Image 1: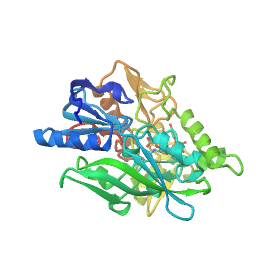
Image 2 (image 1 turned 135 degrees about the vertical axis):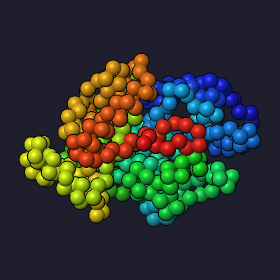
Image 3 (image 1 turned 90 degrees about the horizontal axis):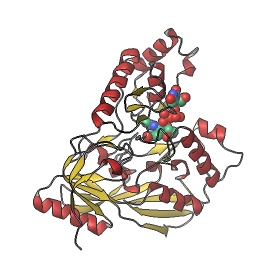
Image 4 (image 1 turned 60 degrees about the horizontal axis):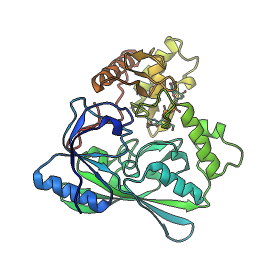
Length: 358
Ligand code: EPU
């Protein structure tokens, strides 16, 4: 095999934000074997490595990325009956996530139907334990096959070893260490669809099938500009730019107090929140809007989606610097009003697993 390594490759077109500079060197790997070959190539030359998936949850620095950017383009879906109604679905890391959802729903396999319309590739999903509308990939994850750059071995991490949390995992915490090669899920043939998210339950037809639930979730996401659509003016984004903050009871009480005092809600129950064990998970989009940042606001070439306050949008001709300045000011405003600090969800692309944006 010979790798087609290119130099000075613009990364903006490979990301949904369409922002940022070029890769010093770049290779697209079309199989798991090619991925390992590219990693060996980088190791042999001491090149820093940055892994790029679908580019839908990353921010590329304006100055570009030094070292080798490895774009995962390996394909392959494999189904295995494991007894009873259980079926395992193994997806190569470069498989588009929507194809994985399609493979499941079209075969009447329950477990991923709410995760439709999410851009990106299968291999990225366990890294931040992708979740939406009441489901998380972690609910169905069996294992992750990955290359461990520390021990230089291909390993299999079972679900527990992945240490999954809300938009969190060991793969994310130990950024730069693991390169995901494939992901395996266990699904239920003929299983009932998951209809747990209130907005979904309200929109679903009576006796909804897996396909109905998938269709309904897709429509909800589309209304929020949370599916990739070339005709959508909010399309250059990374979905939610901030995670929903998980706060303690005291902080929650303070948020409620502010909301009541400012007349943002009539009753405590009107402050949206999700259950999160002893803590409370707040809705970052709600905090942003109630802190006085309008949906659709613009600051030059960047702004807030007109469909959802949690998505930042690039309108073209902008820079990553401008996007990050907007993110910082939104964060400061939410903190000033509610005393809650928002954490960015996308990853700042850079060698050796640059951390998520602070
Ligand atoms: N809200 C507002 N203003 C807005 C947007 C939302 O007040 O502009 C309020 C809504 O009225 C609702 C609450 O905030 O009460 C929650 O909104 P929504 O149902 O749209 O969900 P979210 O919490 O903003 C999360 C995930 C999404 C996922 C949806 C549905 C995170 C960071 N985001 O968004 O995931 O699709 O729930 O499950 O957890 C992503 O991670 O990129 C993503 C899109």
